[in-house]
Amino acid sequence: MADLKDPLPFADGAFDDVVASLVLHYLEDWGPTLAELRRVLAPGGRLIASVDHPFVAYTIQEPRPDYSAVTSYSFDWMLDGQLVPMRFWRRPLHAMTDAFTAAGFRLAAFSEPQPDPAAREVFPEDFPGLSAKPVFLFFVLEVPPATT
Ligand SMILES: C[S@@+](CC[C@H](N)C(=O)[O-])C[C@H]1O[C@@H](n2cnc3c(N)ncnc32)[C@H](O)[C@@H]1O
Image (tube, rainbow, N blue to C red; front, side):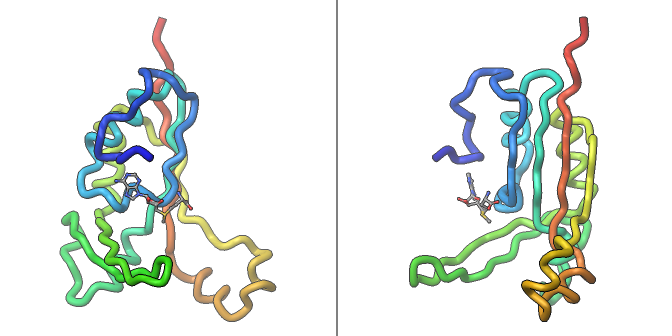
C-alpha cells in the first residue's frame, strides 16, 4: 500500500483515470499528493475524488472551528474490536478548489450527492435525514489535453 504523502511508484502519465474515494480528508496538506496524482495522469486524464462535506465537520465540532481555516478533528473508530483514533482534516470548499487548480487540474464536474432513491425502502428511518443534509462532495478534475 502506498502512503499518499509520499511520491507514487508510477511513471509520468501512466493512467487515464485516478479515483480518490474518501481519502483526501485524511491529509493535512493536499499539495504534494495532488501534484503526484496530476503527474501520473495522462493529458486529458481525470481525477475522480470524493471527500467528506466540509459543512458536516464544521457543524459537529464544538466549539465551531474557523470555517475558513484548515482544521483537524478526531474520532475513535472501532476496528477489529479495538478503538482506533482517526484524525481528519476539514477545509473550506475554496481551499479544495484552490488546491486542485494549483496542481494543474480543471474542475469538470462537482456535486453534493443525494442518497439513491432506492435506499428509501431499505433505510426508511435514516433516509429523510440523509436526504436533507450534505454528507459528501464529488469532484471530477481534468488534466488539460496535450497541446500540439
Ligand atoms: C473511509 S476509507 C475509504 C476506503 C475506500 N476508498 C472507499 O471509498 O470505500 C479511507 C481510506 O483512506 C486510506 N488512507 C488514509 N490515509 C492515507 C494515506 N496517507 N495514504 C494512503 N491511504 C490513506 C485508509 O487506509 C482507508 O483505506
